[in-house]
Amino acid sequence: MKMKYETRYLVTECVSVPVSRQPLKGNMYQYTTRPGWGTVEVYSATDNYETPRSKDANDTTQKMLGCPDTSTTFYTFSGYSYTVAEGDEMVYAEVPKQAHTCLIIVSDPCGYTFWTQKDEYLQIFVTYDENGLIDSYRLASWIDSPYDGEVAIAFPDLQSEEDYQNIRRDTIVGTLEYNRKLLSTTPQGETTL
Image (cartoon, rainbow, N blue to C red):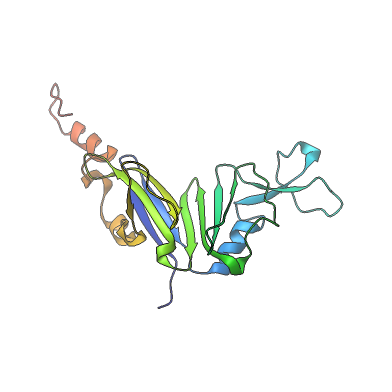
């Protein structure tokens, strides 16, 4: 079965965090290793590596650096991983070749995007609060182990796009929206929380 681009959600007390599956390895690899896509950009010593710029063959001080608030991790079939985080230099000789890559995970301010050759290569570790909402979360590879209190869930276990569109957060017990709605309907002088 051919995979399609799909987004699901980690439902927490404060926000629903999108986790998107990119079905095309080539697109994901280009997105994570080429400037202009929001994960890495070209910077130069001419302005102390502060402003992204166009590639210039005459500027030998240029480096490919991770973008602000972004992290990308590449995994190979052998378990080797290479991460480029904010301000880290991407050293192409150390980045796994596209053919050897079996999992890519990108974290940015909008959430997560991943590509995986097989679903079992990706693990999502979460903890839950007393209302059953996700309290903490992280995406990891098949070789990673859960921390104390974490459980592993699969991508299909996350809230679907359809549920995200149709279920209002103020109807989900424990969310900030639910608690605000509860407080606004409580008679004055009474507290329910």
